[in-house]
Image (tube, rainbow, N blue to C red; front, side):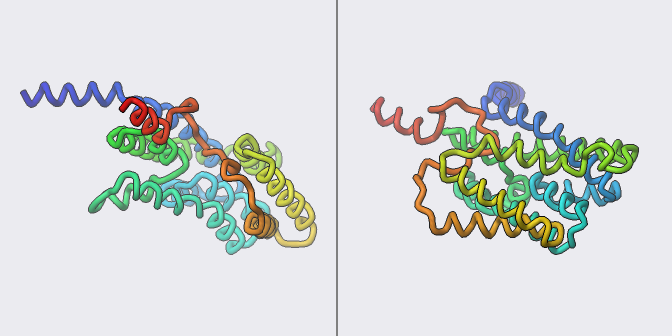
Length: 260
């Protein structure tokens, strides 16, 4: 009898749409760890320093920001500030996931560590509470394991790459940021803020130390955003949006009310 229930539980888990999405996102995001490992190694970080970033910081954007500033000759304080600015979003995600999943006891600690763009997006895309938990943990744990495995692969390969400028790796982090950011801008105001921040960065580069231009851009973007009155539907799209339009908690609730 116990075996039958266990088998049914495994089948339900394998058929879960949240688990399927979480696994696919884990593979796609985890593979990107190769890029971070190679960049960190080629920028002068040791294998164990690189692994400490992925194991302890575990926030791709912040990791790339840190090594990008240091590789460009910036100070440790500038690197930490740039990484912290990008990591602020994880604190907002944490509040959202805490209200959504309501973890208790020791589970709060691992949940906080794996609260990233992808685990948040996978959980938020579900209307069923059990599916929200499955999606969050599948994406979060899956990415954590694969990101660290492929960071190690990239770090070991990076030792053989030599000077990062020879391969263009010194600009790869910037290119990666632009590739992730640009498609996610939604609406005219976010585009205007991004353009103003980019212009401020270009102007600041010749006059300030490495790492400081990104802080200048953050101040400019924050000031514009503070005084602006954009539409509520404008802003940034999530890093991962695996579901078609209409698949959301709000839409599910609306359909249930209409059915009643």
